[in-house]
Length: 348
Image 1 (cartoon, rainbow, N blue to C red):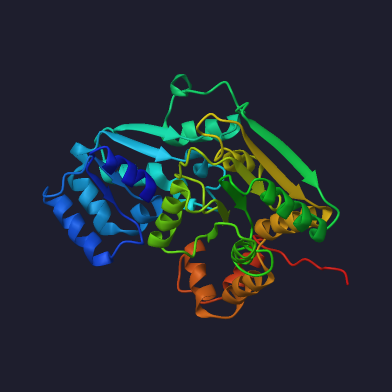
Image 2 (cartoon, one colour):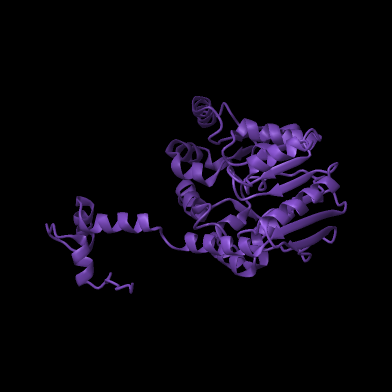
């Protein structure tokens, strides 16, 4: 968001940006100026999460809605691919827009993404009332200038050996390395420190960094003061650096869409580029476990939900949602009688 805003400012556009990295008092004053039309930006950048949780922002947008002629949803694949897990508020954008515009016709909505399969595309069209004839697709799925290589290794030690040899070979190029962990063994921070010890112009990038720290790294990477960035998936959406030559995946990605999105960081200047993915059988097991962990609630969450149903006042109050009266019976027993839930005997 910050990089896109800075680029527009460089073209002489008036830009208003709202996110958690900006001083809250300053943002509040800017919203007041926007409401009183002392601030008349050409572009307003904000996140769906901010729109969902800031009632004053919604009030201000309702006030200036006649001036809003275009709504752009960048990285629109978040609505479907990550909508329920990664960015749940993306899914609610149509609802937020209707709150702002009420009975007034919505402005033109433009959704942009480089990663969208046909099924997800149909879902987004339904959510935003977009007709099929208004969907514009690029026929070329893979840019021919990216050389893709997948390397299977027997263990992590061999992976490290091949990984550092690859980086040495491309030491003078801008290279982006995607890593799962922020901290700990083989994390962005640990691998970045190792790269610096080996003489690389390296840094790490992840979601715990402040907005100023992220912007500083992006600027240095653009200028060539940094050449090797170890990053989580926080580095990607909205960042445009044309001369990144290579991208390395230190582990399997969460999905084919994520892999496609991330290798799209390289070679935007049209020059030959490369992408390498390292993996081992252990990495496959780790990713399988991740999918299982993401798909089912933890034992702690299940116990907490069961406790709410059986023990405390929360469970008893839940009954009023299902039937009238002043009953204070346990919601657990009510749901059992209604066959909404049932005990399962697990063998030992």
